[in-house]
Image (cartoon, rainbow, N blue to C red):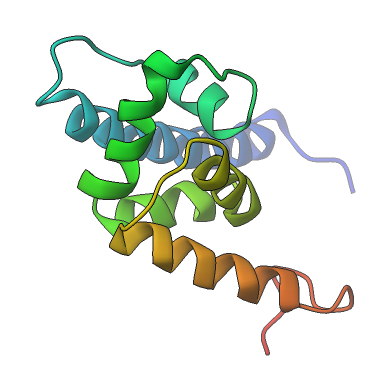
Length: 127
């Protein structure tokens, strides 16, 4: 079935809205992290730190702040929005030596659930 340009655009618009919401959530995390800091981290740098693409020690305090200062719902939305995975967050926690944080413990717990899911159970499949 061939779709009209209007139908295709409406789907694209829905995706654009989801991406906008995801970016706004990421920006909220950045705002919280940067508030008490003398310098700032941007969204791209934070994501690169979380994904293991950057390891400069100067960013450690910012990554730590993500797990210490940002509300767990914001971190959860980063995963739900497919910005990062629980596995990437877990690796970042270990790489950046994040300890003694409620959010750090929560990510470890959530990552264990994600790892424990059988291949037949996709992320979209209900249990």
